[in-house]
Structure formats: structure tokens, C-alpha cells
Image (cartoon, rainbow, N blue to C red; front, side, top):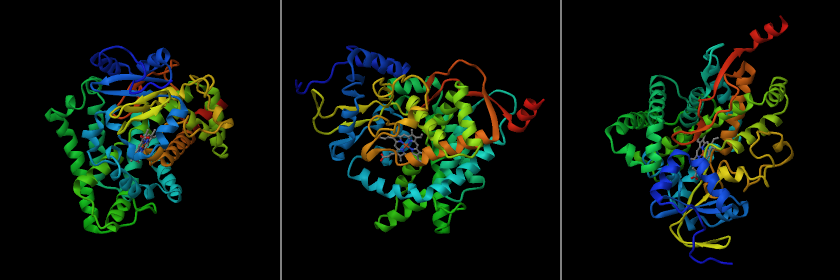
Length: 448
Ligand code: HEM
């Protein structure tokens, strides 16, 4: 039965109330609506623009494989911060055909042939960070993972980076992220929209220095001319500049600012790494299996399964969005133009028919089963799939490996941590509290 021009059912609450519930508890809100209305339902979180959430892989395939011109970008819809943070000419927020032009310029920087060198750089960054961790006292892992992923992405972006400006940029990005991540500010942002934080003077005070330092770095590089990176890759910035120059259109200041802020504001890798240890430390048998594989230097089979399972069970980005430019038939419904179609990463990954014992952390499932293109979607899909999906999984593997080789970790509390909203992602609400001990000392203790 076709339901022309009619949206799927959803909670009958006014959009102001739905916006508040979404701001306070988006994940339980999605789950309850899913239980009540099934695999396709409508939320009215933003006035005048309904969201149709999908969790059936057949529907998701339809969205990811439909011609991209039929959709506008939707990322700024779920996260109103993205517009003011990334800037309107960020690849993530552009509509077609500009989006595809831009994407083609970025993708060579994530070419498979560069991954070995990126991997070496990731190990080096993680090793240095772990060497500074406190010993035998509790600390939250998430900020440490933020430090690692920020340095990794900055080095991947700028190639050869060291020195005072680099340190200042790092400090200012951390300041900006911490400023945004205050829970009250995030709740206001989700309920009211970006004006709640961008209208005040304070936003400019934390944003301006980041923009300025990024541009200073760009000017310095342009002044010096092309330079090779210290680790054998030239850096994403150089790739971008080269492809723009090849097209005869040098990058404007606004463009370079937006592209680089999009890259350095990567939050999902750090939260995914924090979740990896949050889950592993609460499953000692699985952690032991992983440690054995890593310390024996065996192939990365279980490690890869752990990474996939973390990204399934604790997806850093719980929804991806597309704005419909013309009506589209999905299941029984003809969804009108202007609607947001939102494949729900979170709900799809919790489907029992796709993942038996879906709420359990079971990396073993990815030893027997491939990650499906439309049922395992932590990086979204289609022409807007994360350009850095391979890079991010490599980073997770290299960082986990380096940590496991360097220290023994244990959780401070046995209770699992819940999910808390952060600026661009969802992180463990206790920050992933752990205690680290050097391997050597533990070994001595065991012998004694
Ligand atoms: C575990 C880590 C990461 C996760 C879970 C993640 C997830 C995502 C998701 C869900 C999207 C939207 C996909 C869609 O709409 O279909 C996306 C897009 C994007 N991501 Fe990632 N991401 C991660 C790491 C990174 C890193 C490290 C970078 C850069 C160094 C990056 C750069 C981008 C860019 C540029 C886009 C926009 C692609 C486009 O619109 O064509 N991501 N990511």
C-alpha cells in the first residue's frame, strides 16, 4: 500500500517538546520511537523540517545509492554546530555539484598507498603520548585520545609540523573543544540551534585564534613553497593546494579555512578510541585475547574485529542525514521534498536480526561475518561516506596496539559508562576512567 505525500508515523508531540527530549537524551528517544513505530518513523525535532529515520538496510541502500543530485547536504541538520564551526564551504556541508568537486580534491590524500607512512606517524605520536601518562592513579582516557587524534590529524594535514605555532594551534583547538563541550552549552545547542552559542562574543573569542593560526600556517607554507613532509607524505593541505592549482582555481582563504577546520575538528576518532578501552576493560576475556594477539606480534585479525565491533556498538556519529530535493518513495511512503532522510547508524547497529545479542560487546561476530555495506555504517555511505574511513580505522588499530604494548590498563569502576554528547560525537560519560601501570612492573609483581 502506497501512502502518497504522507510521512511515516512518529511521536505526536509538538516539535518544541521533541527538540527538548532530543537535546537531553537523543539515543533513548530514537530507541523508544523505534520500538513504538518500527523501522521507519518521523521525528519533528526541528520546526518545519521533519526527519525520517531509517534502520532497514534495504532503505539505507536506497538512500546511499540514489543519485546524489537528488539530495542536499544534511549534516548541519543533526548537528547545528557544524555550520558555524566548519564554515559553509566545508566539503561536509556543500551541495552537489560542488561537493563532488571538493571531495575529489581531498580523496588523494587518503590514498591506500600512503597508509603505511601514516601508520608509522600514528605509532610515533601515540608512543610519545603514552610515555607521559600518570602511573598507578586514575585518569580519563578520552582527553588523551583527543590529544593523540588531534596531533595525528594535524601532522597528516600539514605534513612537517613542529614548533611553537603548532603547539599554540593544538592548545587553541583543545580550548575551543572544551568550551563547546560544556554540557549546558551542548544541551542549548541541540534544543535551540547554533545561535545559542554563536550569538555571544565568547564563541568568536575561542574560534578566532584557531582560524588565525590555521591561516598563519597556510601563509607560511605558501611563502616557503612546496615542502616534503617529515614522514614521507606531503600533507593534505599540499594535496588540496596542488589540485586547486591544477584546476586553475587557487584556494581562497575562506575555502582553505573551512576545509582545514573540518579536518582538525575530527572528534569521532578520539571518542571511538575512548570507547574501545571502555568496552575492552569491562570484558577481561576479550581484552586478554587482544593483548595476546598484539604482544605476540600476530596478524591483526582480532584487533580489526575489535575496532569494527566498537564502531558498531558505540557509533560516534549516530545518524547521517540527507535533505530530499525531490519526493522519494521509501517503503510504503512517498516522502515529500524538503524532508530529511536519516539512516540511523545507532538503530541499525542494534537490530537483533542483523546482530544477534546486539547489545553485547562481541568482536568475535566480525571474525565470522563481514561488515555489511548497508548494515555496518559508522562512516555513513554513498558519495558522502567518510573520506577518512580507512585512515580512521588504521589510526584506531595503531593507537590500540601502541597502548597495549606500552602499559597495562584497568578500569577504575566495574560499572559500564553511558554515552554523553560531545561537540561532534558521543563519548563515554565518565571520560573513560582508567589506571595505567607499566608492563615491566606488573610482570615483576606477577613473578613475586
Ligand atoms: C572513527 C572515526 C570517524 C568516524 C566514525 C567518522 C564518521 C563520519 C561520518 C558518519 C561522516 C558522514 C558520512 C555520510 O554522511 O554518509 C563523515 C564524513 C566525513 N569525515 Fe569522517 N569519521 C571519522 C574520522 C574522520 C577523520 C580522521 C577525518 C579527517 C582526517 C574525517 C573526515 C571526514 C570528512 C572530510 C567527511 C565529509 C565527506 C563528504 O561529505 O564527502 N573523518 N565521517
